[in-house]
Length: 121
Image 1 (tube, one colour):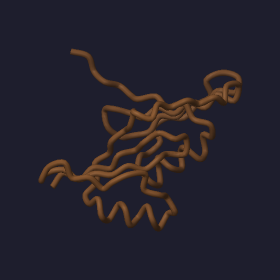
Image 2 (cartoon, helix red, strand yellow):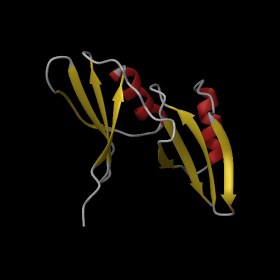
Image 3 (tube, rainbow, N blue to C red):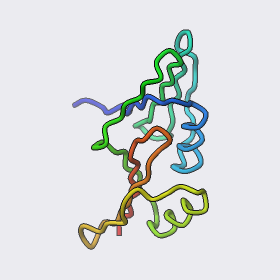
Image 4 (cartoon, rainbow, N blue to C red):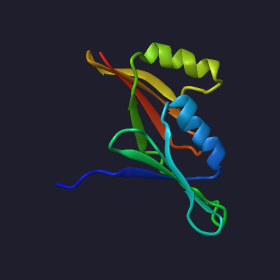
């Protein structure tokens, strides 16, 4: 069996992206380093699976598919929506409740990647 290590996101602005994933999503930086001329990599998350951010000053054409999202569990969708409103972050879509046990909504990260916040009821 293979172990899932991380999801990689190419970003336009490392500082803006790190701020979003730390302050909004609540992930901690586990590693951050230069990976060649104009290239910086940051890994976030305390668990087994990480989020990897790559900023390449030589290639600013970040193209993220609109059908891809990263999901993060929250204690309360309503509280998270209130928190995001206070931070000036718009809700992309939702909230949705496809069954009695799950409720979720989406926002966009600074690079246009959909981020899902899900509450298990």
